[in-house]
Length: 441
Image 1 (tube, rainbow, N blue to C red):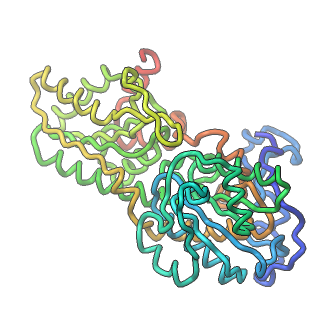
Image 2 (cartoon, rainbow, N blue to C red):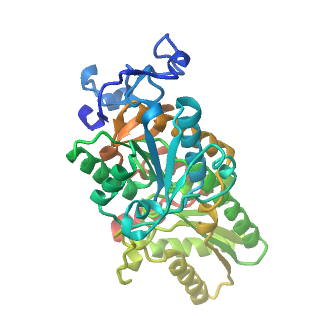
């Protein structure tokens, strides 16, 4: 990562005194606050810094309120859109955006686009909704999104036409990597027309796989609810001879939910994730041995794990053009049952997939706090004229991340990192179950 890759685009110099100027600390950067003139370092160890001069160290622009802003709050109109799959906290972010805009900046004209980017394209016929303090008062108590959502690409020029016709000055996009790629195209189309419309993202991914934002909102709620499913599966498995609880959790490419949920109740015997391939001929005998010696076992599998065993499945794409994964959980269930039957060993397997139940719940208090603070950071950045960027928290500091950097890679569990080491310690699963795959698959 080079320093210029973390520079955020701006629409122009802030010339208007912010309504929040008097609230801002005057002492500059402290351990609890980063001054707007400072930068937040990307790396936090001497080895990662590598002896480079300070001027060459990659760093983020800090988030938070500015003393001077670009947009006049009394003259602007703001749009909000939610895209992609559901995630705990969507309504919290919408509410946080509206309340911060209205209460702190005095922005009164705020609209929501229904059903994702479809709501910004005329041919889909979606209505818009006025967002006020009253209309968002209790929405944080409910899961989902009051604006609705959708998947799939839309023409960015048609979207910019919509923004121009409605007189929108700031667009907040709440969505995942596909949504942010769409937001980049929208921002580029705005720049080509030389219009001053800010596009700011609040990144949403229940899988926690967007880089440079620390942790995505909704993730804590998701793995906490997932841990409840693991607890139920463990109880079921322990109650029967030869009991196996097999739980498939979300995680197309990243095994964070599976890893954290397993650590949360520390009952899992195996955790299978996309980042660490495994050898079926090593896993199945070890599972039989564990059930025979302990009486039961709990297996946690992320949905993207084991896809190498489903290579013969037909290729299917979703509305956004992403390849749909094969259902490895069901495949693994059948392989386990067949293996135990072939060995003449008793087995009582319960298969649980709580994915949709998890992503539709309201945010827990920890995520609610994070959603509000992300929303505040997004509003502060947008009012200061920042565009084509997302907000996140990096090493405890709120920062601005260029959208291009936020979609440049995927945040994944490092097989050589301390999180996976903790999972291996907690489960006691043998390293050779995973290591054999690196040699044989």
